[in-house]
Image (cartoon, rainbow, N blue to C red; front, side):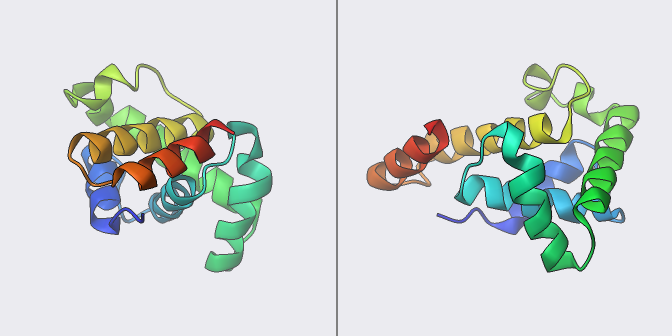
Length: 131
């Protein structure tokens, strides 16, 4: 199941990331990739960044740097810490991989709670995340 981009967009804006930064769009794509096909955290640089870089006509290191900048700006805006729901999950300034994993986990939880997955889809997706 694909998560609508509008949900990801709204969540990133809610935590203080600005759509005017490239890192915002890289985060949107990384969350979509991670939501659809989970990668372990250590494979982020080798699996996800190159895919995003190829799609956006840039390099993996630039993708990582722009995403890191987006996390820094969001953290400095302090909107993450003021958000009632996400502040319980995001307790410190995270790395890109941690932020993506955390937001994907939140989206999966919300999708499960609101019945956006059928039982078989959720089991298949959750099993893929555990491998």
